[in-house]
Image 1 (spheres, rainbow, N blue to C red):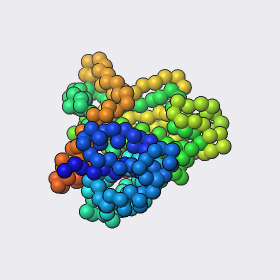
Image 2 (cartoon, rainbow, N blue to C red):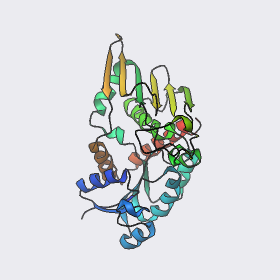
Image 3 (spheres, rainbow, N blue to C red):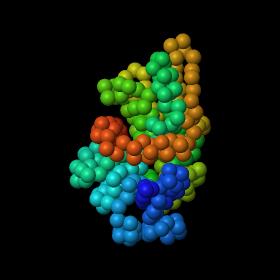
Image 4 (cartoon, rainbow, N blue to C red):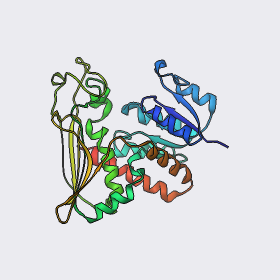
Length: 294
């Protein structure tokens, strides 16, 4: 019997649809905008028509994640919530506690890249590791909800930093014990400074009140840097500075479909494995804690 999956939000949700169909799932889609060509424009209609789902994928604006999760949880075995999860670690705990019968996971797709074991091996031999995602001019839709703190909870620290932190967890067996050794989140650009972007469009009458640069360091070895707009260079890579000062470099690029595939399959296969879900909870709370007070 095939699994049934629900996707809410058909932006990045289009990628999930492709991946879920490759997994052999029956896929139902919801998007309130009729132009997105989803099966339903109202979540209640999707629930009424299908009753229960093996997996649910929440791919809507950040400020809607918690309320949608509470609404759909009674009808789902597993709920995946796109980064950055919800507003705080406390809010994440509250969502889970209100729906103890449902499994929850913040999307951490980069942890399921096929070469994670190789990255972990290189990290174990390196004296320092720099995880960076810097774009030349890629603030997402400046002036929209993406750049409004009230709706996004933060800027690049909520958009890209969760991906870097999940890679850090995957590469560092001591991630629980490593102390944060410095952090910075700043807004380098005002809305009037931004005439164009490679991601979306600029709304010059909107709001841009979030960080567009962020760095978090752990111990003396690890650095995570996210930057939406350098205007001079791009660097999306993990760099390992080895003991002899040589550099090993892994280009990140966009996360491949297979990582999403592996993440979803692993979660479904471990539905009844409580150790798996305790680990997910620990990782998801930790990621929230790193970014909620920046």
